[in-house]
Image 1 (cartoon, rainbow, N blue to C red):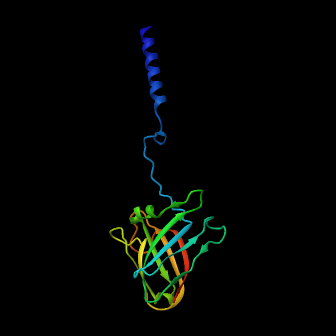
Image 2 (cartoon, rainbow, N blue to C red; image 1 turned 90 degrees about the vertical axis):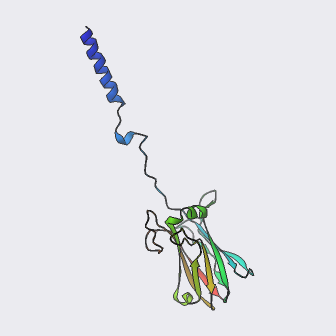
Image 3 (cartoon, rainbow, N blue to C red; image 1 turned 135 degrees about the vertical axis):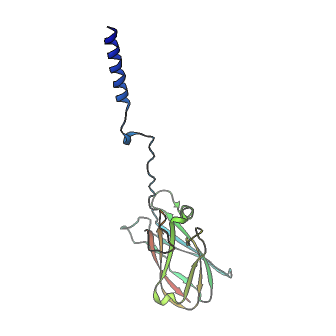
Length: 188
């Protein structure tokens, strides 16, 4: 009888061990990869301050319902020739009930973001844009300085690129576009 009890106890112990085993995928202690979702940017603001302090203004691109909805609202940028402007960018998600300012997150992840400015050809001879912030290796572009030389008009394309995993190289080639906006510009 002792032999039978021993076999039953061994069988019961084996069943408990097997029942308590989980597949590797079922274990809650295995760390899951962090997925960095792209920002949902519905508004971009440019804050201009002339170096001489004589003028300060803000322009905005706003598309609160996102791609495919209503057309975005786009302000025109009016600049004075012979002036230099310090420009600060702000990025927002205004698609929900609460406005989210994404600028600090972009700055915090500066080694994964770059703002690129592209001027169409007639305008490119009249404006020189230089980023004034960096991640320690490459520009970020949340702050920049614009030197305006002569009257002209055209468009500026502003692109925020997300360049994770060490692919940032100081250009706008690698990565994914978080937002791309075209502003009309006139220089007096």
